[in-house]
Amino acid sequence: MIILLRNLGTTELIIIIAILIFLFGGKKIPEFIKGIGEAIKEYKKASK
Image (tube, rainbow, N blue to C red; front, side, top):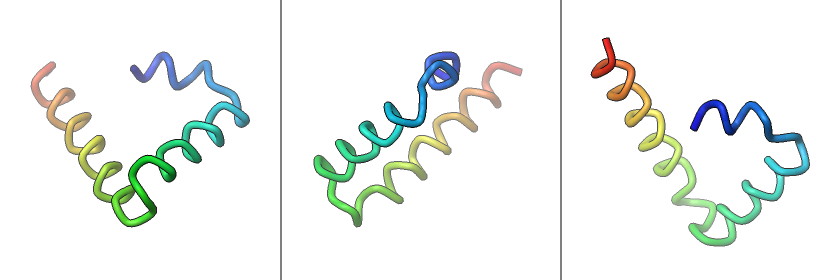
């Protein structure tokens, strides 16, 4: 997934963020990002 994010340009990131805000609402975005961060931490921890 990290490799896919490296290939995205500014326009694509803006579109993705706009879609996320539209789908989840502004209040749920921080919870969503926190969940992604925790998942990445767990993945890195498990891969060691």
